[in-house]
Amino acid sequence: MNTAHRSGRLAATVLAAVLAGTGLTVAAAPAAHAAASDTVAKLPFTSYGSLAVDSVHERIFLADADVGSHANYGQIAVYTFQGERISTIHTTYHVSGLALSADSSTLYVGERYRISAYDTATLAIKSGPSVPSDQCGREVVVAGGKPYYTSQWADNLTQCATAASTLDTVVNGGWQRTGWNDSGKLLLEGGPNDTFVMGQGLNSAAPDPFLSVFDGSGETPVRGATRRFADDAGQGALDLKDIAVSPDGAKVALADARTGTRLLNTSDLSDAATGYQPLPAGATAASVAFSGDGEYLARGASATGATPDLLVQPADPGDATAPLEFVFEGSQDGDRVVPRGMEWSADGSRLFAVTTNATGGQYWLHIIQPPAVQYDVRFTGGLTHSPAQAVAGEPLAVRGKLEWDGPAPGRPLQVTASRTDAAGTHDLGTFPVKEDGSYTVLDEPGLLGDATYRVSFLGDLTHRPADGPSTTVTVGKAPASIALTAPAEASMSSGVEITGTFTAQGKALPDRAVLKVERTDRLGSGTLSSVTVGADGTFTVKDIPRARRDVTYTVSWPGDDLHLGASASATVHVTR
Image 1 (cartoon, rainbow, N blue to C red):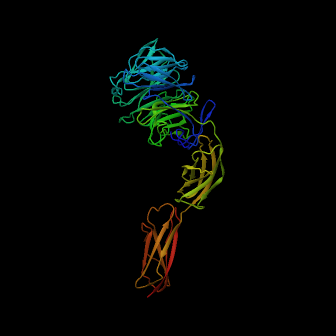
Image 2: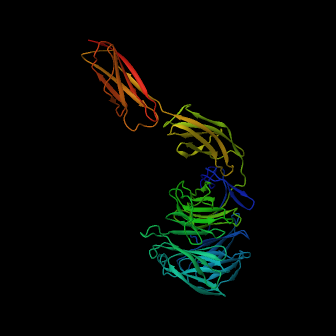
């Protein structure tokens, strides 16, 4: 994972996150300036099946799926919250889905021919009833004190995408069909109060996959809200990669490879009134997870280069706090977050994320802890601007200074700025702070009158947000100028030819300027034919003088709503 500090640590941009007491507290940030603690363990896998986090015993369980053959054995790697592998559970056949009981005393494991139950304290097997064979990899969830799991039969892996999946459970030590089934992969995700969500993977046999909420408290699951997402034209179908249920059960978040992160109301699976901002351009949604207190959301993605693969942000989509972003890239970190590859510890102090390389043959476990300390920042002095006279359509620089406590940031801090004028308030974006604390806000005001500039600091990983000063600038009309080149002498017979250049600063004129031409001689003054300025700003005035001696030509432009007028004169001595 790229970093501003050292290889294999926090990369890129944004979020103020502070680890306080029982969980992660996010303040805000436009750029990352200190590395979060990111412990990385290389997994002994060539495939990935599932992740389960036991916060009671502080254990992380990861399954190596290795599906495709009855000869493949399975393994579950067991890690501490510090990233140390302490054990490996070996199974006779491939293993895929993992799920914990509500009290974290039992780990349920989906194997090829059975659903095994392990004691999470001793890692000893407690039971392993035989269940229908699965060739494609199970999903497992616990609701109502019993495991629910998927079963898929296929002659080979190429058929798994569309092979029929059934939802089964274990009752009194034996397997039982629930009656719910459909084609392709069925994803299961547990929720509070013995509920769970089932979502269908996109496949050729299911061009409009479903999402359903189930009550698993009884002997058989009861379906509640359900939804398909395609419109009448067949557009907008779900391409589901992961499901997360908020701890209070009110919201469901989806990692949709087509649209990004969807946020739904659990009651009817309608779209939440406010959704999450899009993932960075080039990132495809792969995974999603709510923190245990429901305050924060992690969004994993598949992306290349410097595009973030992981965002951690407030779970409330109305909170404008910028997310903490991670870029995973390279042989020490993997290249992207895997689908179904993220879980939080119950207290929100750690996020566990599984990454893989571009070819999908190697896997890494990241244990991410945001830093625990935040420092104050403050704006010093007021704001200045240049040029002294701001004009519409011309660049304006507003300058100020910021001070901060704590260590020097690894990357430049950034301030945000806005302009309020007669048309309302406009967000101007973010601007870097130099090492000496100075910053410059660049703008191009477009309206005459007062424009008020305000700056603030949204915060970062180690610095708290701060409100900044404001200044009001009077924006005037932009100047215009006319320059003339005329002969010193001319004759009445040959005439007078004067060339000139017209320049208007600020906003470009909607049309070419038309200039007024006046002639003053010993017989009086009069207006000649107007001239239109060329595309290059030049023009020519031609005249046959009517009298000898000095003749003065005055060329003028009256100005417009955004530009001042301009005038220039030239005197030519006219002979016979």
